[in-house]
Length: 102
Ligand code: HEC
Image 1 (cartoon, rainbow, N blue to C red):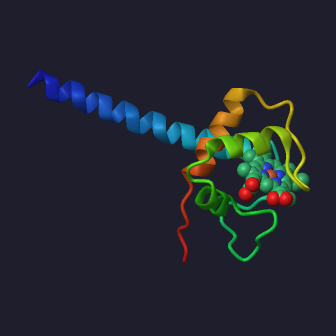
Image 2: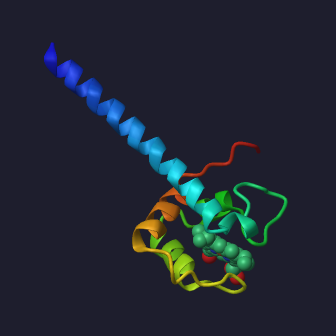
């Protein structure tokens, strides 16, 4: 019987840490003004790309996303003051986004 309780506990911890990370990403994106230029999922505006579009396009290429955040691209400025950890949180947050409206 005990192992069920242990497993349940583990699942709860995973769910909790997962949502904490997602929220951190959104908080960071606001703090670091990413959302001043980008929208999360405003489909009508394609430039700068909405983050759901970025997630779709670069689903298998998190390195590209990290690189753009660090070094900039086109009209997007570089972000040299972001730490690797912050870039990772932002990247995971972006890749976890899904379109909710079709
Ligand atoms: C000054 C406006 C501006 C800010 C601030 C900004 N971006 Fe961007 N971002 C852009 C533009 C414009 C592009 C499109 C660049 C291109 O493809 O020429 C872009 C592109 C990107 C891409 C890559 C899209 C692709 O397909 O290659 C990612 C990922 C991204 N931004 C993430 C972020 C994150 C995360 C932040 C906050 C740390 C941020 N951006 C802040 C304007 C901005």
